[in-house]
Length: 312
Image (cartoon, rainbow, N blue to C red; front, top):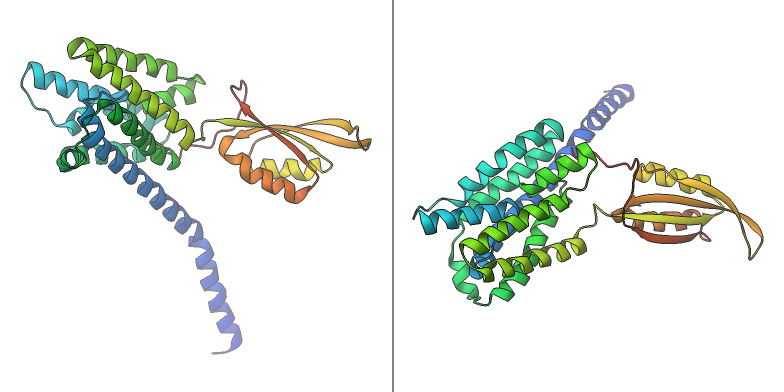
């Protein structure tokens, strides 16, 4: 075989490798997302079978509504329902809506989380509760809330949700540009009021502590829904703007000015980015302009167009 034929074969193999490289990358990315979702579902099922059951807690969302439904049927009708069956039925309608209107892969990964969590909650050995032997409801509420936040964070890192009310919150946010968490909080309050009236006030109050611990821990673990404002004073605005644009797809506004110390012309770049993007942007900006002055502010609320990566 001569060199030209060998070169042709090599070039053909290289083209094939290049052709299928995006597919392989997409498959690996999907596998990572599925792994995170399954890990989150397993942790949530473990948490339900340990801290939640040990403390007699009623978590928020569809998980809490499922547990409350099981308790009602057990106490008043003496009927034992599987956790998974009730959880699946509650998630059908919001999952169908999100599948049609938000994103197919996003919804399917969230449904995977619900299915695995429901199955493991029913079939995971109850010996975990006996091993922990935790009889203090306050400790159950605090540590259960932390574990709950960790499981939700794993799903969020996979660009999925834990299902239930998260489906509703994402749908309202994406379609109407409104923050739905106030409505979700109201729904959780209704669940807790029902739990207090049907069973005991103690259970409802400890469940509030559980939800508070979840909220605080989730804010520490996951920053994807938060934004940061970057105020960058630089002499290289074009290079830094293109960095922000290429890496995050966010825009920036340039304001010309003068640095009073050296009386040199400077540009102030104003840009809002996702909270998890500011660290690598700051490092990259410093590589472009070592003298750049960067002020990072926590953004409480924004109105207007802000780029959000697609759910799928």
